[in-house]
Image 1 (tube, rainbow, N blue to C red):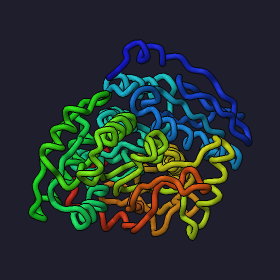
Image 2 (image 1 turned 45 degrees about the horizontal axis):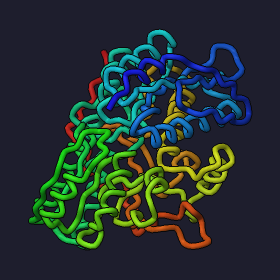
Image 3 (image 1 turned 30 degrees about the vertical axis):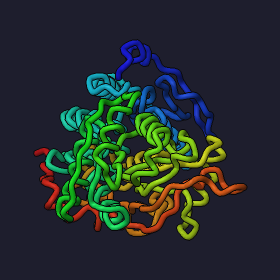
Length: 419
């Protein structure tokens, strides 16, 4: 859980000057990316860059850093250079909201990006709405953010949990059966993702059991023993970050892959890179994938990220990149940093191909401010011998975002604008 010592230590910042290129700093502590120019446009970012979700959070920050450098090389926002100010939420709601308010009140950011942790993203949305700041959620998935508790100033790049569940659930039923056991993180993301899966499973006449587990769980043995006793056809592993890595390692150590299939929603590249090859199994979704040979601009983005960070980009890199670019597109289109004007402009806004980096028309839906991005469904596997070390997933189908999301009216979102 939250390390209070780390939560205190992350109040310090260091400064990185970015011109045409990128400098790669470790992300253990908050930092500022700044660039030459008078009165820069500031973007605040809050993410759990330490702790169990540090791997995906750091990837989001790297993607955002890359976008800032790209913008500054090409004129910035409204002709002004861009600064990215990053704070560590330490995977704690109170800390995340405190850091967001500091960015807004002290640092006068024009935009907010937050947070990998759905509960923190949800809480920060209340603060940004109060302060009338345009808020892009890069990677917090829980449905109410663009559902029943949607807000005029909040837009989301990653999928809802309902979208991810809809994209993969029928495949799991058809391939493996209707008896499931859930390993679920006990917070907003896990709750709404399991609800989405259960709704589809019940409609198909299936049954399930499962355990809710705290973030930061180290020992999954009791839950895995319970699962083995239940005898499911599929273990639905919907843990995240380091928790997913540890649970999959223990799943293999117990030899449970011989008794049941494994799958779920997100098995992110960060997690795949951290497990033994025996755990590279199952059927999952990706919200962006690096190997899209027939999609324009993807190969260039992959090459650029590899050059900047010496790694293959993940969906989280794309989340951070697309979120910063969305801020710039909104401001440059409206020629303003007024949040209301920018939010109106983003309703129905289609991302250009060099930002979308995937097939289809990728746009922010007016009814709920959710990005209708593609969902990549497929299976995990070890990398081919002598091939790309990150070739760990094969896309078997691509589900359009609007098909997975269903109608905006069904989300419960009713956007209320300030008078």
